Image (cartoon, rainbow, N blue to C red; front, side, top):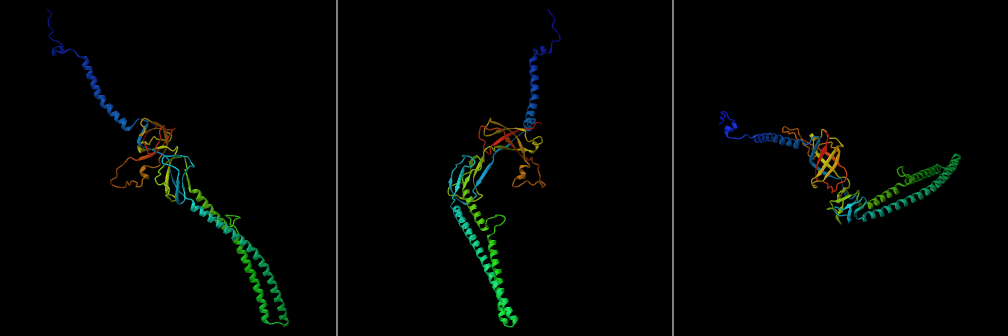
Length: 354
């Protein structure tokens, strides 16, 4: 019978068999316990600082050009030819204003033109008449001078009196003064008939009346309000038949076609490597799964706080530094499958290449 080993293995002494597999599992668990937190930290850092070469923001919104349309003349709205969210083309009639007042202004301007023309005709006739008066006055002056010469000849011979000489001299002076007065009147009439350098060949009174008529015609034309561009009509609450129109008061708006873009407000710390022309990806919250491509069109010249109604004043003892946001305009490349409504929230990712 074989002699027992006085020094059996530890596993035999403890009554356990060798377990190499359990040792491997322990090592795997140890590795996982180490790598798990490292991976979590790395994931958190990646989420916090973003992907390398990419900056993103969810502070972004769809923007479009909105044209506010107001009447250019005062009057009552007579017809409204559009409805809310209707698509219109440039030149389509949106609404009309009562033209009665401006038609009356045209008739009044026509009367002013006729009055000015009649006055010009009368002045021309007056100039001709006064030219004849000048000739007659010159004849009277010649007669008075001849009479004065005869009286003086008699006076020199002693056959005349001083009173007759004075009367003859006075008659000559009166004839001369009458010629001067008539010539002055002719000059005044010709001045009224003259035209200025601004409207050569046209009497100023006639030109003024014609300008009033042109203004009235323009006002009549402005009573028909047309769409200035292609787009979608919106904000029609004040556009009602019977509503009084005042120049400059907006009545309706048009969202211009083809003007959609994204205004993304990036942190100032994200702008170091951002340049116009860099590729961008756009995701719109309203349309999950739809991605649009675009590019950086421009970077704002000031932060959002600089253009606010009440800019922040940091010259205080309680100053706290706050990361500022800078508006970045993102142009959308191509056309979207869904309508891009102005104001929709979106998320923008820009590939800055660093």
